[in-house]
Image (tube, rainbow, N blue to C red):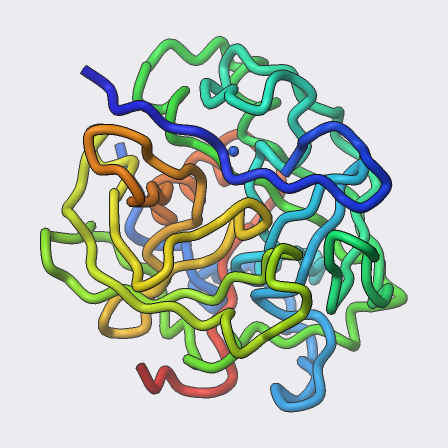
Length: 292
């Protein structure tokens, strides 16, 4: 029986409806593609304004970016949850059935957003890939994929690419991608940026423990000292070695009340590589080492 879950969505102060929800082991990380062009030049980690953990606003709904990605054309993407552009009910978690905005939808990157303000505009982008769109087009039938593949890519407008750095704030990394999953008790690290925290970044870094792997490898339930809240949707999670483990998708109500569920990053990215039509799509390592 699948646990009861709700997506971690947050509405902006405008009063918009709630919107925020076989594995390859090579070619997932920047540098692995032999046909790739030279990597973009990243802004310094200490001064970059676009990075993992920045707030994203899609049609009024606020989420949190997870990791930075690039491709063979040198384009730059920030990841977010696919349900951040959902158009259905706030409780929709099945990406094969839920409504969603189309590719090309504008996304804004902001900081210090709260329930009273959307925060300072840092840049813009557009949705270049959504697992919810891709699964509908593919006629996906696997229940685990439909339930847990909650991943989207926002292509950063070229005018703002020079402001991007791939390092996760506070923790450093990612050092690569976890392709082996997690076991109960494994340490995890994240950086949420919900507008519910009113811009208090001291509350953004989180650490906790995984409860293992479920959904045929597609999901990891976990506990953090303070659980992910609406607006944290899409946040990236690192494992104990600083590798990208997953992306925050839902808050579980049962049987593990107060836990969160994250989609497995390696599975989500492999699916995107197959269905996005983006040549050489891959995650970018942080420029600063993991220090968790």
